Length: 71
Image (cartoon, rainbow, N blue to C red):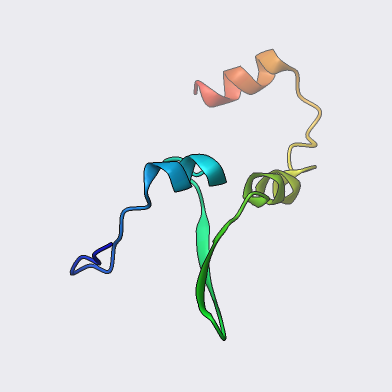
């Protein structure tokens, strides 16, 4: 596998399929004594949802919300 000038590599299709990686997936590299490990961040969506939970606690009906967004 060759690294581009920008530091990019192409993850082989069979590896992407096995790990459930698709366009937009979050991945990280973790270093250890043996080298680097590619880790798929599967909990990102759950963390983002938890982060906004309760943010929309204004008691408005759907029609009232739509009216506000259409102004």
